[in-house]
Image (cartoon, rainbow over all chains, first blue to last red; front, side, top):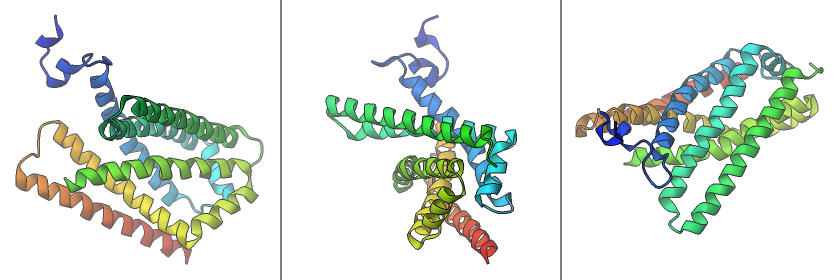
Length: 131
Length: 110
């Protein structure tokens, strides 16, 4: 079966374009948005339901699997979705190929570095000995 | 049109300020009570509060206009009247949700 025979408009563009993954990027952005809809509501609800927001209370919250696991997902999916989103903005507004590549590379480094830093902090909270 | 630009602007704000503050907050929790006090002082400073209120509004606006985009991705809601109503509802909804959240938060603080 060739791609042209695929039934849906999305199916027809998947794998096409110069990078061969423009359709996947579009789809990933939507799938991560649905995950973040749930994780975002989880974060707001959790902060509202905690009895206080002092260091001891939030540490206890993030040491439990019910706090640490959704937070890890929020960090990974949040940074991924943010990177996908700002890439669309860069691709739309930065015309020149060289500066577009530079912007996308800087943003990639920032996103991966930021996610690593946030995950490291979360691991220290979750596995640390100090309460 | 305007709501579409808002979606991008709030997305960029959430990326840099939102994820930046989330990371800073997690790092402060991990570093102990003294570091966390520094974060709390900055967050409850008038400027910090304005930033946090702006971020929660950005979050709700991006969430609601994001749902709008997901609906439109399925090919629905393109009729002029429906489209405009939906766009206005995302702004009304984000302002109401932000106000409700902060009234609740500041009410607790007293």
